[in-house]
Image 1: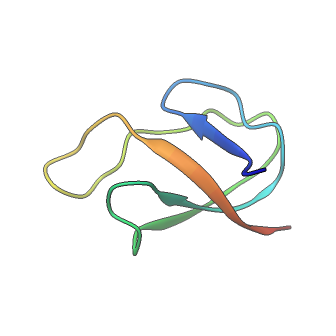
Image 2: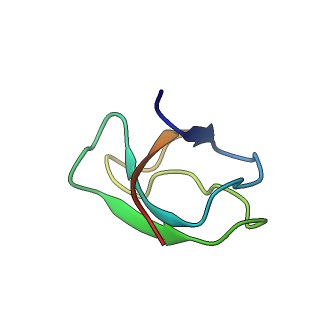
Amino acid sequence: MNISGTTGQKCKESGVYYCSIHTANTIPLSKGETFPPCSWGGGHSATWILKFKA
């Protein structure tokens, strides 16, 4: 099961996340922070998928 979140949701698991569309774009996020939009491709709402737990 993948851990993920979308733009505007609160992060439930600290770690490094990647954008489901631009998979090379990764962000560190801590539990409780809000998932941002993806900054690639002119910026867009994104689904972020956990790559590594912190």
